[in-house]
Image (cartoon, rainbow, N blue to C red; front, side):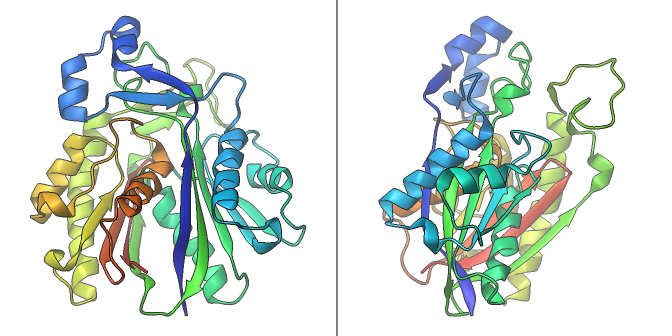
Length: 321
């Protein structure tokens, strides 16, 4: 027995920030952001709107559109790096607000742009080993709360969002087939919010810092080689994969990954211009839109690939059902 994504939905906050606004606030090069980075606008949460609000909205949309009862969910995994509180776990707040049963397992996972790829097998293995029948995996983050909108290196990139996926069991030759994962903690300071935990020097700010060049170098060094390793382990070539759904960091990185893996334009999903980099939510948002477009057929092979803060990475081989 394996596990599959049986339903997907996402939620975007109402507040829209376009590139014209950022030209005024931080002096971005609008042409560069739109043509090279590939982002036209992004959504951000209201100041009083916590991460749990985004998560609950995505989950309610999933439950209402797919006729899912609160009693159906045995496990709730919430992946975020900006929880409502350091404690309690935000997943418990969401479990209560959704009215899920008291026997529902609920916990947070602290991961960024690789979060969806990691969260699938974490939740999915509860299903695989009969510890849960159905799991809800929610990606939710609000980088708007930790961004300095005068910083042209981060302000244009990130947007807020939440995505919710329902996981169910399936035959073991469909759904999750295989994956590989890893981390390079030596790059811990390349994407960081200092003074955000118990390590505080009280001399700096608490905004997100990103060394974009180092993140780019990490992604294009690690992802092509590890995807090739995953394909070889399963006796596959890149040409056997219908769609590669990379973390939607920016168009430039994705195009470089495409070039290094020798992929066609038809194989590569690019879907960020209306949302920006929504951290953990980029892959499920792109996947939901891909499914709705009618581009996938039963049996199509997909690669999900996430990379970023940590530094961490992960790839999943998935057979669509």
